[in-house]
Length: 303
Image (cartoon, rainbow, N blue to C red; front, side):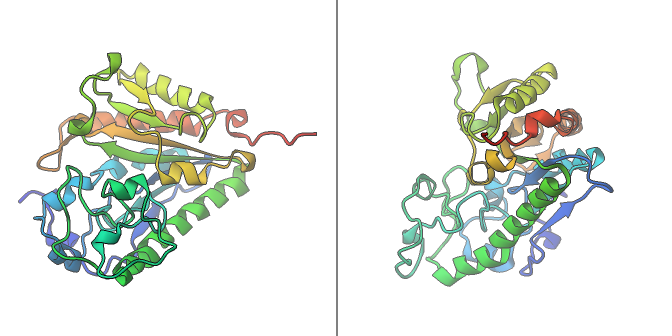
């Protein structure tokens, strides 16, 4: 068993706190970095309720993405990172996107049971892991979903909102960079001239941040030899859509990194090129943290 397999220290029914924030000594950047899907602390009860083995249950992880962005603090920006796994509860969804077929009893009418994410098996409490394997051996109690959302989902988002508020108070503006990875085998194999891109930047087709920000990120990545695509196949998830508030000076950008660049996707291990990619992300972090104030400033009110 390697260091990156599920060791006993990563199996714990007490997942509190479910996240942490790496904070700079002094906040000097209006950028907030977040890694919502790199958590790998698995509750024992959750593992026992699953019909997947301990490697298969990890297929939905954005493994090690938090490590790729730890340089944020060196540039005066915080990094929020979840410790609980995406397969347990997904904070990049609405609070209650749930598949009714996963539960013993009918769900309350206010639960969103018809979203495309639910249809794909990837709701707030997921039905499947990446690749399509079903997680659970039996149906769940609705109260189990409520418990996960109340104790993990909501505190995570409260922490993210707190970091946004800190940036707004200090700078009057904020850029959220939501950090993810994508399985290389799930990418389209014939995608115009890009092939399988190294990076996908999602700005909800230009609605979650000004195009200058996306353009600067894309140019920075391309200058380092990485292939970049915008919004296809990932335009941005719940965080990207929900927190973008141009009128209040909050903009959002999602980044998806091809896992083949830095990890063995089968054995969930870092590749020798991991450190090289981390250095490239450091360059991106530095560039975004140094954006001109007018790029991130809220629009002027109409006279």
